[in-house]
Length: 59
Image (cartoon, helix red, strand yellow):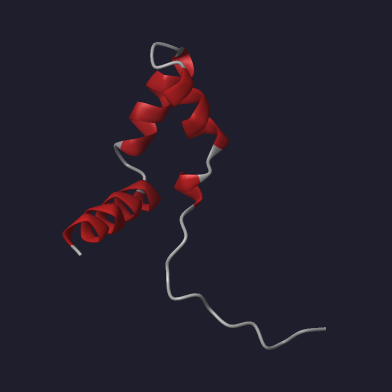
């Protein structure tokens, strides 16, 4: 068993590979897209991901 796991220097977010997000983006007029939009209004993970992306643009 490998116990020497090194943390990466970059953060990873589940939002980057979320299948729900991909479905919503593929069909923006679907129910899934409306559900996704509602979800992003209160999701702390999504807000952290957006903040991270904004910081990457500034850098």
